[in-house]
Length: 101
Image 1 (cartoon, rainbow, N blue to C red):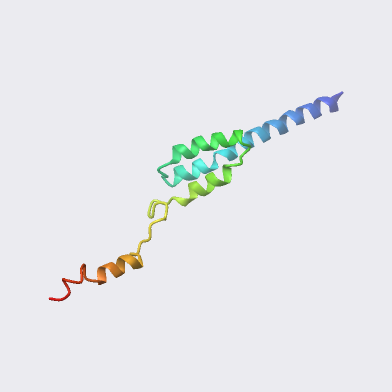
Image 2: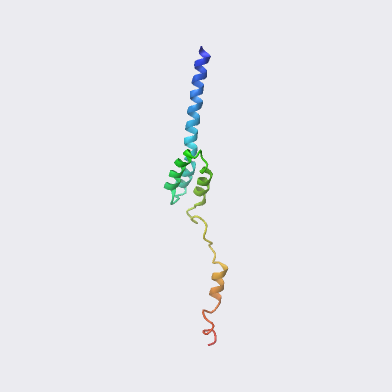
């Protein structure tokens, strides 16, 4: 009889730990975004809750989205150096007629 109650208690304990673990894990991308002052941290938080209903299928994408942003460079899609086309445009005269003098 004691082992029946012990097994039932252990079953509830393991179920509770798993439930809490899943809830805690879904919030990791939001915590990363909040730590990095991500401008879309609220959207990441909502998407994290939505990922609970999709069995965390979108969770890896949220992790990537949250870690892409840094305050010093933003999302990192802009090059800090001018592109080659901009450098060429600056080195050429604006029109062929102005180069004749």
